[in-house]
Image 1 (cartoon, helix red, strand yellow):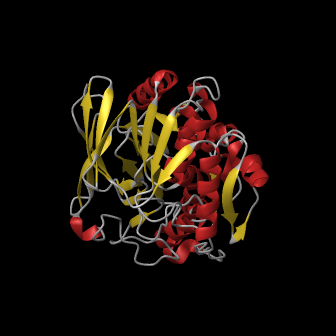
Image 2: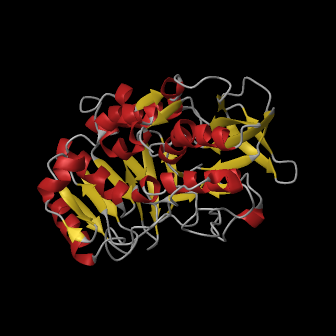
Amino acid sequence: MAVHNIVVIGASYAGLGTAHYLLRHTIPALEKANSTTKYKLTLISAATHFYHKIGAPRFLASPDLIPLSKAFLPISDGFKRYDEDHFELVIGTATALDEAEKTITVSDTYGSASPRTVTYSTIVLATGSSSESPLWSIPGSHEDTIASLKAMQSALPNAETVVIAGGGPAGIETAGEIASLFPQIDITLLSGGDRLLTRLRPVIGAAAETQASALGVKVVHNLKVTSTSRTGSQTTVALSDGTSRTVDIYIDATGVRPNSAFLPRSWLTEKGYVITKDNTSLRGPADGVYAIGDVAGYSLGGALDIIDAVRPLCFTIFADLAGPNAGDVKPQRFKQTVTETQLIPIGPKGGVGSVFGWRVPSFVVWAIKSRDYMIGKVPGTVNGNDYVKA
């Protein structure tokens, strides 16, 4: 019997959701539609553990608020229900892709094994994005990220000065968490532009600045970090106005880059994101290629661009592979939420935000996110609980 291998690269929010939906719903439907073909899903993950990076601002501030054991969960545990004929987890980093041969070179993250080759029939690119700092994502081993978080937790109680670069959610949330726990620290937040939270309307960015200032954070606009250098335990930060500062702790929260360096250049936009030819179906730059989440060209970087896309993407894959045998299945199309939706905690008691264009009060931010950074949802994310129903 012919075997069709669906490969999903990436095992963060987008990759996990897509893999679970395909295994639970799409593959059984495909095997019913095409009885002469067996379908298997191979999930490639650079790390053995899922990281709930949404909660990083609180994780780094203190070991006492949320245990790191709740933030990092083994990916394999979430896929024990699937038989080996239909599922394989490959731990390693995708380092090259041969479009003609339909192969992916996967290098061992831990450097203890030779690279292996994975052949794909269909591929879903869910590799996400990376940041300069290992605090916000897993650069390789999850143990490296845990070590970075623990190092920050140890350094903060003795710090007198902190500079945070980045006026987006990561920067402002981190400033709020540190200021709430360590009011004695001199904290400076460099927005890098003329205001905070540029994806939200100016009045919300201004409210965020007011709340941060009330906690003692000094917000400085139109000033960027151009370079840094370490001297002992301190960091010297060179600034765009020609000055420099030496501080106890420097935190880079300036943004992300897509994890797409291993892909053919013809598949990517100028900025390195995977081309999505049709943003309602999420088909990618070539036949049998699909993209979802932060690495995809359609994405604005928000959680809804993953949550709202999983089912439509999997329907597209089913329709493309089943062909005339798809039957009378109701089409699902991705409809992007373009109204502002973002919640930004500023300390553990609240924050600012907007939901579907409606500005929400601080207590709503607390109830949804600031209270515990949604840590209770982590096991369900790994287990695919949001995709039990088709």
